[in-house]
Image (tube, rainbow, N blue to C red; front, side, top):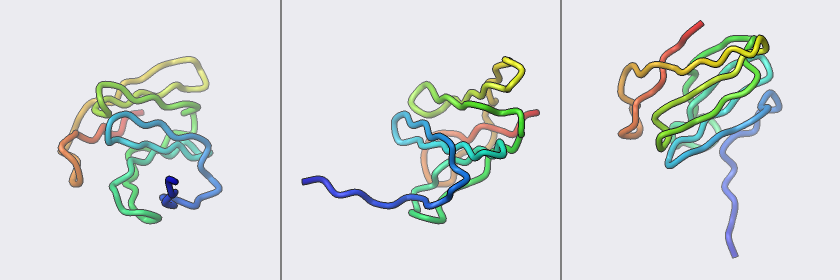
Length: 94
């Protein structure tokens, strides 16, 4: 039987998306986090924008998209290499 490992315990979480080894989390205030691999405190803030309503991930976790309340869709550009994986972390955009 499979067992579950608690990764986060934050009531502000409204959704998660995953692809490959990438896991992202959206909070109710528009904060977007990437999971770094350490349970409970292993997340890196990638962006905060109160207009963000949904996030999506593609290309094995290397691309992150967001949908704003206006209907606009954004693709985050890549910045520095992710410190815990070989994929790259999306940058902060407005």
